[in-house]
Image (cartoon, rainbow, N blue to C red; front, side, top):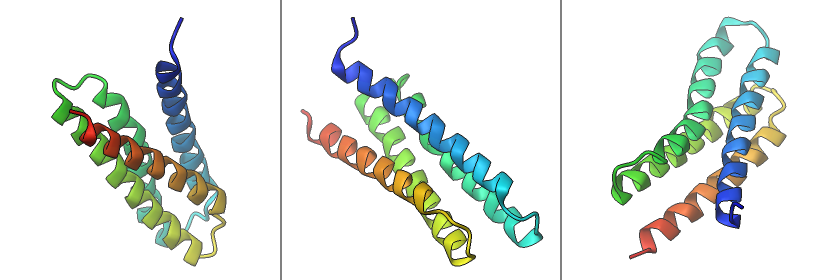
Length: 119
């Protein structure tokens, strides 16, 4: 039987996958205008990088390496927020995506604080 910690980890990874898929779907709904092309590319890269780095952290060879992957994931979440805010300024509705991204950022930041404070 899995413990609560393992259950949370699995649920969080599932949440990251769903967030990536939501962002990919959002880009598919955006107008097919050249001004959106670089934004679509960048937001897909940054959003999918969040989950990819969290999953990659599972095979880390050290605690330092594990923390490093979580730091990259948080940076990717921050970059995703940046692209979402640009889309908002371009009148693309992104509030639900921004809310989910902010919650993910908070979880990552809290996890990093916990990891760095463990001896």
